[in-house]
Length: 171
Image 1 (tube, rainbow, N blue to C red):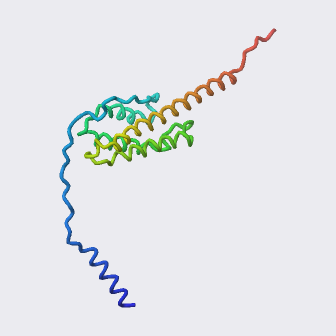
Image 2 (cartoon, rainbow, N blue to C red):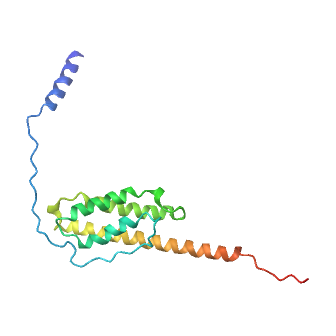
Image 3 (cartoon, rainbow, N blue to C red):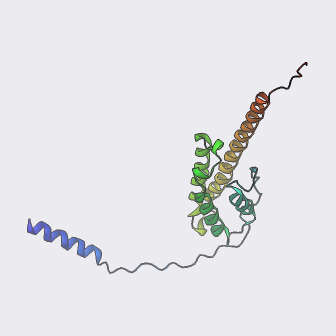
C-alpha cells in the first residue's frame, strides 16, 4: 500500500515539474482587406427601445464593413452581445421554443467563428462559418418577424371581437 501511495506522489510530482517552457505566440500578419467581397443582406427585426436585439443588430450591420484586422474584435463583440441576450430578454409572447432554438443556433455559429485564428480567415471552412452566421441570423430574424406579425394580427382580431357594439336604445 505504501509503495502504491509513494508511486502516486512521484508521478504527480514529476508531471507537475515540467521543464518545458510555453511557446511564445508571435503575432500573425494578415493582409488588411475587407472580408466580404459581396456584402450579405441581413434581415432586420423591428427594433425599439425594449427590444434586446438593437445593439446586436447594429453590430451585425457593421460586420460586412470589417476588414481582416478588425474582424476578430468585431466577432468577439458580437458574440459577447449575443451571449448577453438570454431567454429572459425575449418579449413574453415571443419566448417560444422554435424561436429560442433558432437564436441558440445563431449564437453557436457566432461562437464557432469567434475563436478562429486570424491566419484561418482565408480558409474555406472559416468563410463557410461566416456565411453560416449570416444565414443563422436571417433564419432567426425571419421567424421572429413572422411570429411577431402573427401575434399582432391575433391581438387585433381579439380587440375587434371584444369591442362591444353600441346599440341605440329606444325611449
